Length: 251
Image 1 (cartoon, rainbow, N blue to C red):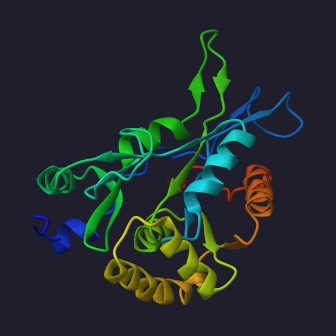
Image 2 (tube, one colour; image 1 turned 180 degrees about the vertical axis):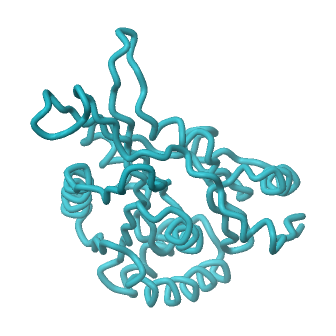
C-alpha cells in the first residue's frame, strides 16, 4: 500500500525553529577577556552521518557511541518493516504510513525522506533537548550532548540546507562492487529491491561533495577512528561569533 504522505510544498519549505540560539554559554564577571575567569559551556554538535544503503552506517555509529562520551544517537521514525535483530525504540521507531503522515502534518520532523518505498524522519523535539546546555542538581551549567543523525542522503541534504552549523559526514564504500556484495550479503531483500538500492547509491555517491567530510568504510576500526577524530576536532572548533544584539541562530 502506498503511504498516505502527500508532500505539501508550503510544509516542506517551512523551516523548523532553531532549538537554541547560542552556541555556548560564557561565564565570568562580564564574559570578556581580562575581566575575570571565563568558562565556555558548549552546546552539543549536530552530527550527520550519511551514505548509501549497505555502506555500514549502523555498525560504525554503534562502535563510535561506545568510544565517545557525551555522544548519543537520534532514533529515526520509519514506515519500513522491522529487520531481524532490530529493536523498537532503539534502532528505529516503527510506525504505520498513516501515523507518519500525521507526524509530518504536525511538523514533527527536522528532516524526512522517502527511500525504496519507505519513509524516514528525524523527530526534532528530542534532538533539541539533547543539544541544550543544562544545569545539574547543583545549578552548574553542563555541556549539551553531541547528537548523531544516521540518516539517508536526501534527509542529510535537508539538514544541510536548514541547519548551517551541522557537521556533515559522508560514509563511502571502498568500491561499488564491495557495496553490491554487502547488500547481497545481508540477505534481507529481494534482487529487485537490491537493484533499486544500487541505482540510488550511484546517484548518492555523486553528491558526496556536498558534505564536510568523507570517511571510507574499508575497515570498520579505521573508519571509526577517523569519525572519532572528526567528533573531537569539531568540539574544539571555534564557532562563528556575532556582534552584540545580532542573531546567533545555528540550529
